[in-house]
Amino acid sequence: MPERRTYSAEFKREAVALANQPIATKAQNGRELVVNPNMVTR
Image 1: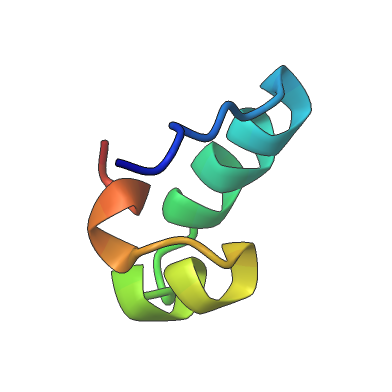
Image 2: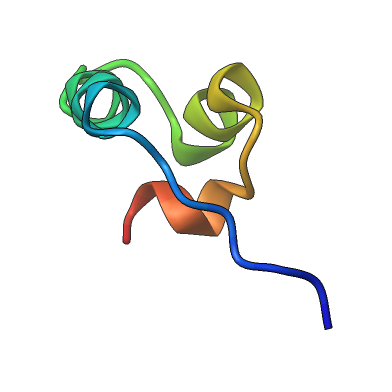
């Protein structure tokens, strides 16, 4: 089983800022952050 990734507080703040943009989709945010789009909402 692969190790779990840990994300810095700065990365998480950036992810929240992207998620709060009204025109961005989960898929776009996931691609930009290089994570699975379903992880963006978590």
